[in-house]
Image (cartoon, rainbow, N blue to C red; front, top):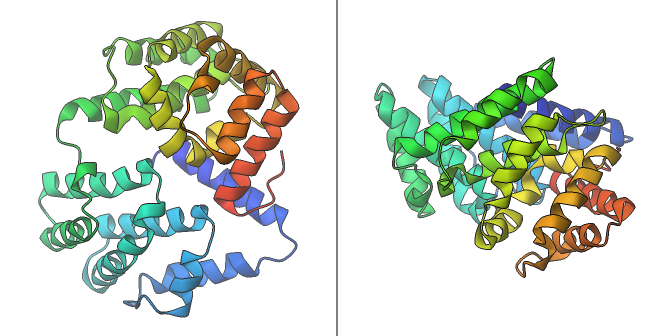
Amino acid sequence: MSASEAASISRACIQYVLAREDDAAALDFSKFRDRILTASLKSDDASVQQLLASPPFFIRTALRTLLASIRMEDGAKLEHALANLNMLLPEIWDSLTDPDKWSVGDAFAELSNDGTKPTAIAGLRKALMRVKGFDYVRENLRSNSFKRAAQAVLNAHHALNNYYNEPEPTRQLAAMGTIIPPPALAECIRAYLSVYLGNSWGHCWDAAATAKQELKKLPANRWEYYFINIFPGQEDILGKLTSSEPCGQWIKLICELKLADIDAPTGSVRKLLDASAHGQERQVMSHAMALLQAFSGARVRA
């Protein structure tokens, strides 16, 4: 897991705990996380049914726990993790965001390239076959190169002295090509939006200018795909939209690129885009908070 992903998950966890008056759900999930590594569960198990009825944050966390264990563990823990992934994945696949689906394909590709854990490779292959998920296994190095470049931008953004360090990796990502491979779209848009939106204290002008130019190049169908399949689960971007300074930047971008004109998004995403197009900062922040709450299940505080 990258540092920026860990920071995003930690932030959401802290917000979730602080937003609740009791921590029963958190305790239940902690016990469930231990069980999926020590026992092979059935789909009608009460704890599995509780997970399936939980907010997407918990489902994503359970999936990442299983994938991390499949990468790292051997013996009984590996067997339990594989059995539980094969049981859970068909139940949650349709509700996963595309980045989460890609994480399963990436785990399979990574272990296949390494070749040292045949049991894990076979178990992941079986799980992907159960959901017809091989479309989410990256077929070439180009996507991975874009992903690494985007991660370098995010690392600079989340590190100290980020305004000084952001321009160079942002330029390097922009220099990789005008067409972003679909498997890397989530990471690249996330990286460009992160430096363009900045934080509560402002943004790096040089990096933001480069990011804006690249975002302007994206065709409408890519933005439609992003807002339907990726945006509702990008906690760090949604979190930025609950702060005034990044929210103002967002409104400028949506208005200039006329992104509210795309037809596809519905629900809170559509309301957020429409509020953005009308310059309604308070409403944009409110809809971003609603999307965060829908994802994490917490009464998120700004």
